Amino acid sequence: MPPELVIFDCDGVLVDTEPATDAILSENLTRHGLPIAPHEVHQLFAGCTMAGVEVAARKRGANLPNGWLDDIYDAVFAELRKGVPVIAGVIDLIAQCDAAGVRRAIASNGPIKKMEISLTPSGLWDLFEGRIYSGHDHGPKPKPDMLQRIMADANVAAQNTVMIDDMPAGFNAAKAAGVRCFGYVADGDPARIGDSRARPVSHMSEIAAALGLKAR
Image (cartoon, rainbow, N blue to C red):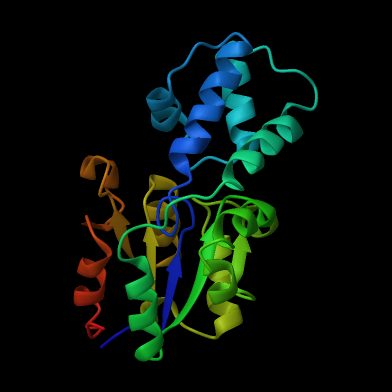
């Protein structure tokens, strides 16, 4: 039986914003005294809020100015406005959910403004409008609060909900909320699933098949 609700992460699950963000952080942090390559940014900070990145970067020796958080968001938003790729197979998965009457929502640690910028060009913002949740407003993953809020708003129990994420913060939020989770690790290391109990998948079509959704 398909679930009643599927909760999608945003970055790395719906759209591939991470390469652009990693490159901008690499250049910025290097300029402020913390030499770091884009792949190292991804390893250290993927899934974090920018406020978390700021704290961690300062601890590692970055000399960040006052107002750094606003500046880095400005730089990231400017790059994302150029357009970002949609994750392969996710549009089909959304259509299959709709055809089966499965509701959907987004749970991201990123701010709403960032999601609006990255999701609008592909039409994903309109597809999820009114069901888009940010950790800035409801508590960031790995806390379960945001997922619990989504389920409460949808009046759906945890056992009838599925999460799709690509980072440990999301896997562990799902575990804490008692929600079944698929770990999308197409370009990463399935080992990062850890003990979260998330099921690793390398393509969105695997999720559709596992949920018993019909192909388009």
